[in-house]
Length: 138
Length: 177
Image (cartoon, rainbow over all chains, first blue to last red; front, side):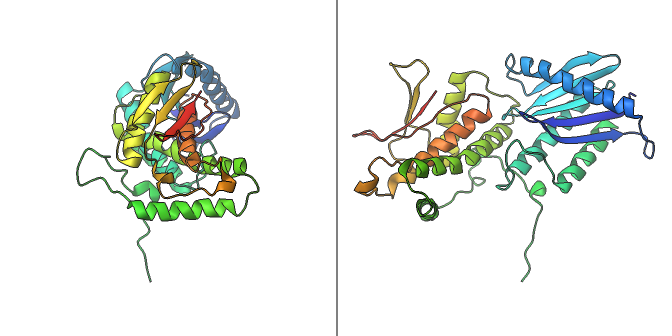
């Protein structure tokens, strides 16, 4: 479904943060669609790792296209991957979204109690990421 | 007694050293005092020199990871380093300037091993005020700085082993692989 956006922050071994940005509140996507979304996004991780060493840009644009869905990626300096599964959004809005989430991520990692590469459990981070998504992606 | 608690996600990250008034710094004596307490804390809990050095490195590791993300963000270029030499230059100039106020004194490549490098600092602030007793002869408290360097390198995808050594006339520091 092109209206559902899946955003995942992936560390070296496991996803650190997941969020779905549904454009239709109140409806639930079918299980098979959700599973497919996760599958597409995770299979793109290999392509991201390959591309990571070829460019020094943080924003990698679209790394994979499956059916009508595209996966865009942003890499932080610490090689944490921000991946967004979408059905076609403008490059600029995705880039702005990633930049704002990057700022939130850097602020979060300044917390001496947050261990690098561990799942992000902060509720305020979750709220703010959703606010950023509402601003740039809908 | 009330205190303004701003959420960490709302605080500004700062723009770094370029603007004169913006850079906030900590006094050397405050840092030296805190660091001496850190060393004493670990020293009371370990039984060997290498364990103490390992703990100091571990303490510095988190600092290195955070410096990497923070400096890359503040540079506002949206670029990552993917080549080793530019990464090492980033460490010896940017990281050093931001932590210690000046760039490292030199970055050298070892002649014996192609994958070994040395960052030289004549007066590392962690050991300026530390005197090592003779029964702990080999100890280098600059292991903290080794940890910082290791954190920066490993975070950006260059696994490295970093150690701190002092060399007679000059203070020598760090060897990464």
